[in-house]
Image (tube, rainbow, N blue to C red; front, side, top):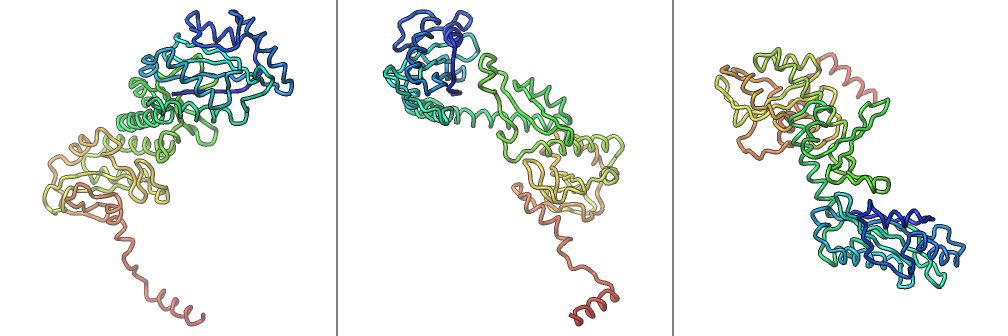
Length: 384
């Protein structure tokens, strides 16, 4: 349940907006207001607000909105009850003037409120400090009491759905233009931000069904990539696209794995092949995965797809991985293996850590030292 609350000085326009909504608004509750017009109600509220001249931002305004599939099931009375109980938790009393209106003109049914923070005795009952956060917590408490999903719970579900669709789409695209187009086909808008130094530097995702143009100024729909996943960074997506484009180029000129590897090596990438089961020289060996890494990426941190010291798994990032294996392998028999390849265990659940361990074996072997260098080393030790 999305919500917003802010303190401000209002004019009659705020009450006109609440009571209009393109002619579809329905007033579901009011308190200590006698007039039936927006101008009359504003004058009543302003008269009471003037009893406490110390408070300049005397009005509390905002809204509560449920996702369409939930909001349309709530009656107007239920919506009004949620709003009044939440307002009560932030200090609105039976002596405060307010007006509640249901709006139906947008995709999401929602309720707007205008409240006078000054009660009829001249006391300010609603503190302005951190009112947005406090009101949000109040709405969540009421929703939990009524067995409804809160905005936090709904947000978790939406982020999971966004991440699922994003990771699936990344397997079928190799540039941002295609990513935006295919995500739109799935019902998501991808918004990219740029700067002079990095080019594309950020991403925001919005569900098309969540767009609410009437509340856009006070509620920005969607989530930043960092909010959707703390593992997937925009830099990782850019690296992923570079790898996929390099693989596409290699496919055009290479007819087997040796040529494929040599081409990518010239482009600054390392290639490591992971076999299914123990490698058997002179026979066909089933390939489970191919790991590709930029040579200068050894210090890069782990991401959602990228594994430090290993790189990107083609089976995880490329929907055409099986076709690549067929085209590169063909009917040839691999007769030898070198230290770029990974001897995979038959256990299908082998972890990336185990794979990385095999790749690092060569680095852990003792290093040969020339005799002259060894003598020089001994003399330095004695001098110390």
